[in-house]
Length: 155
Ligand code: IDP
Ligand code: MG
Image: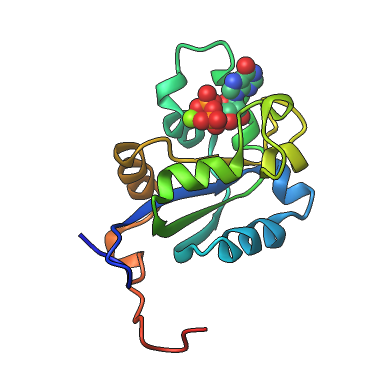
């Protein structure tokens, strides 16, 4: 298990910048926030998902009434898939994203600030280490996930 300088375990998680964030030109703002929070980008890809792939990504919600409109939304424009690494990355990234419904999201979270409602809510973050593993593999091959050389150019 990879650890940081403080000997804390490092986790990886998948962040997805959703199509609404693209349309609102929020991609840079979002990436900047996660860098400022101390996360490291291990992989990044802009992709326009087909409807079938969007449905597959959200397969856990296939029985929910919002599955079809959600999938259409995710396939409507590009998304950016990003692998972030950091301490407690799964939990912390979701905390920074905020609650699904921006009306219930805490101040300072990205959804509170930028989401329109509980569908067009700017970001996705993996909800567990198991989901993170599956979702990272959905977008990236193992060799596409960068292994940082810690000693170079540290701030
Ligand atoms: P999460 O993204 O906060 O983990 P989930 O319950 O996993 O929320 O739902 C996945 C996505 O489906 C949400 O981010 C949102 O875009 C959409 N969604 C969830 N619940 C609703 C709803 O009640 N109406 C419309 N869209 C929803
Ligand atoms: Mg979820």
